[in-house]
Image (tube, one colour):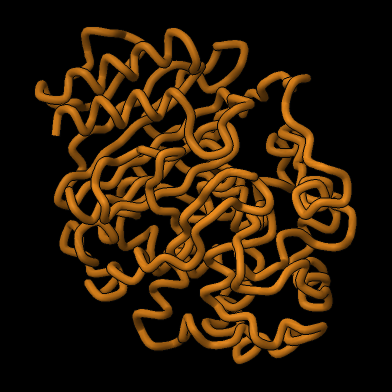
Length: 380
């Protein structure tokens, strides 16, 4: 238990004391407020939270505090696609145009649903300059994406679809289910699993939202070559963290970037994936669909983030750059600033981390999550 430290709350069994210690060290050095949770065999085993929900340290981080997790939201989009595929309502090897005919324009007729998940569709960003007005307009954004041509041969390489992957997946979900991806996720995944995570926050919950705290820009950060795919993508996908404090951002559905939740919710949503499809008495997926997530779609230097990434269906597989789990049948993804989700099919473990202090070097995890996962696996 954690009642010995007044700034840290929740549950952490004695055998995982090193995890709690790592969490406390993070709060003392790199974090302002955060939560960390782990399920084992589908049951919540570790559930920690602490610190403050604002930069001024006036609001305590509570059990029900939620926060914008940026690209960790993508993992919830993946679950929506996997649920539909498991039910036979979509075929992940079918062309996107089967479900979204307008998407076939300008040479995109052969792009498959699995290419959307593995960032290999060649559509990493919208052609139009990014504005809040465009970003929050679902129909307009999807219309822009449907009209443009791919930036490279689809299926041949990954190029991180940082801000718009959720629109691509979400429009297919909408066409097939008749519901927005936020509504589909809530009804089919969050509510059955008791997970406090929203894609499009209900205004009644605004008072529970922790403020993101940006990291100062790094003047020595590498700059991609002009006109490269990376430069073109970042020029059209850079969000001002200040937007996240506004009602328009919070209420919009941006399924690649504006999900709000805590570590507990993220661990609970991924417990079924880690456990062959069923957790806490709820069946979300079949064992075969869970295994399909591990099928490698691309493996190489990502054209946008410039590091080696091995993408399965949506989630990335572990490699030397991202050693969050020692087990081969595990997968993960994270969010700008440091948030993380891991599903380990070998250990039947799911992991969630959410925080408000962003780190500039954290595209997918950082030293905070490395310390926590290292302590967890040492205890396991």
